[in-house]
Length: 101
View 1 (cartoon, rainbow, N blue to C red):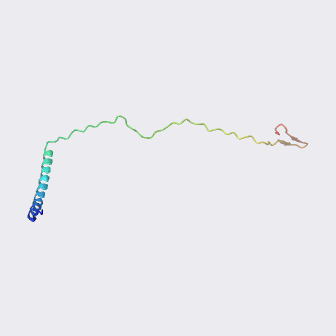
View 2: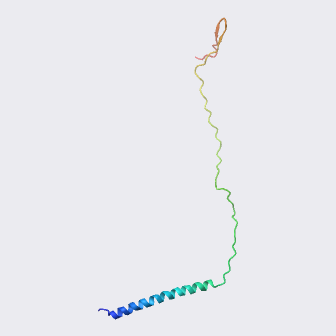
View 3: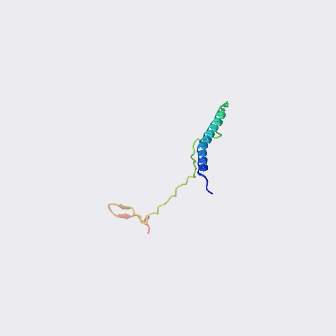
């Protein structure tokens, strides 16, 4: 069955006519509700400020480490020791006590 063109035109005209009326009525309704909320005597609440329990001066954490003494490395004694030579007019004396073999 075909729908008549008159019926289709009539429905289309109603939609074009009723949709703007519906949208405008919604806008007016929301506007009215919003104004009724704002008309009430609203007293501002007094602000309550709480001081913080602990005040952080800085956020750096210092870790104390035990002071470590540097290792003392002893150098080995040289293998050869130069002997003390005393030169005199008459004879040469070599000190043999400090010599190592």
